[in-house]
Length: 241
Ligand SMILES: [Zn+2]
Image 1 (tube, rainbow, N blue to C red):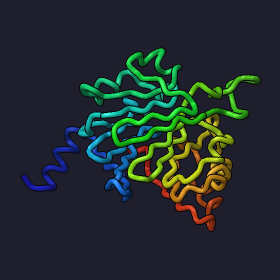
Image 2: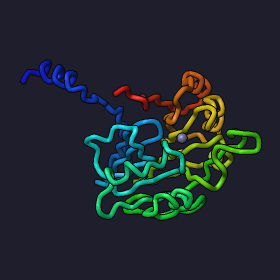
Image 3: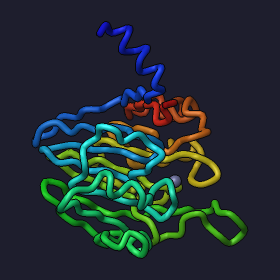
Image 4: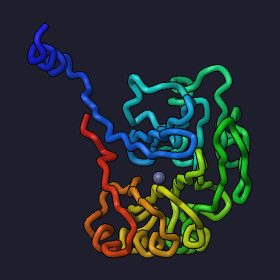
């Protein structure tokens, strides 16, 4: 069958044609491959192991490998989705999550803010993620301190940070030696791009990749970090299937 014919067949069947902008990073343990699935959903592959972070069935997981490790940041539906877990799990898959998530995802092993666990070749640090001022009503926050976890995943001497849903909290600003940072920015739930850029300047990762950014003007983020020496990589986290 000719290539054009295949394309038209795909179009006729209405099949999704997602091409993920996969990122590769050299480490002392070999390449770390990171696939932006959608919104806050990320897949990290290294040393023959697969880590899914905040898997959500809104993303396209067709053809993606099952997880050795799943990290969940929080209870909201775009981060904790019990429906997707059987699809991307296999015998022995470990799930690390905060206690609030483990109330629903009962197979999860709890990791709390400030704790570190080693899983296979990965070191996982759980960090606070929370709102400082934004919430659904006066006196309430979208994300209360202590409920959710951001994560730093270390592999082969490189440190990958996944912020979860947070504002530019002190625990983010004081991070050290981050090679690649995935940082959220969206209103009303987290923070606007200028605040995200200010927090990123404070901990100065080598590379920053905005994620969980629906509705945000990323040019504001890029401009605010121009000349900082921090590489900003803009990826499409919202492919139209
Ligand atoms: Zn979210």
